Length: 135
Image (cartoon, rainbow, N blue to C red):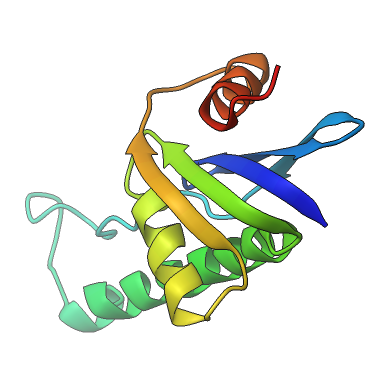
């Protein structure tokens, strides 16, 4: 079992850094989620608008949430090997992951959820090492 881990996450990618006695290990997980749903269909200026031709917003949002929950569950499965973890990233995904971990009663203890901008993999690893005081 790994003692500490950190995850940088957004809706498209998660970078998991685990600190082990033999060193650190970086795992990159890519999401299959494309982007937030937008209303489709023709502009009112181009032709008639029929509500039945455009999927309902709540239906599209539920589909996106379902896809994201699958991604969050896969990330959580990788994090369950750690005793404690920090979660950080640029957008809403970090909070959504934390809520999902609480809802599914993940075994790992989340120590912090912080906002950080886009980072390279070495920057992410350095942040995790610095947080846990690893050399």
